[in-house]
Image (cartoon, rainbow, N blue to C red; front, side):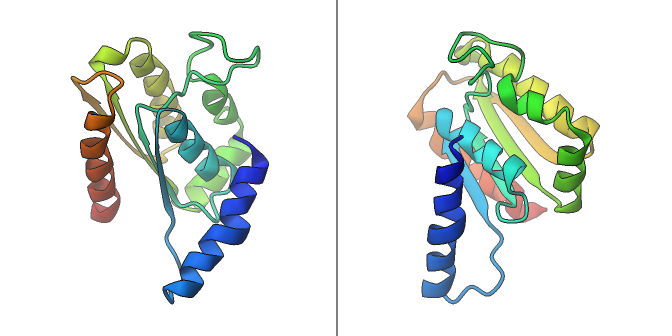
Length: 156
């Protein structure tokens, strides 16, 4: 994702919310659907001190590839590539980062790409839950996935 976007969240939105609602020590869960799910995962990977957990509903983890927006790209896209670095994994573990992903069996290759990322996280003992549902790339299904993701984060 665009570093300027992460910076706007980190430098502007989160401080404004914590100030306006009197939150002293926020636990920040970022969620998104499709490309937003990719962005949520990337925020936690790039800034785990600020973004503590990610919920990705049908996350587009195949994108981007080193060659650009080609389908289906290498397994797990650039997120899986970022998880190959021991420093990244150590920082995620140190910050107790958490991930929740939900994909549908009707989304084609997205399940295998997400599974690749989940396996990398699990191999490093990073908390991750992966749900596979029967939906397609469908906003109606994402509401349930978001709810399950929030419940998963609250239960830990």
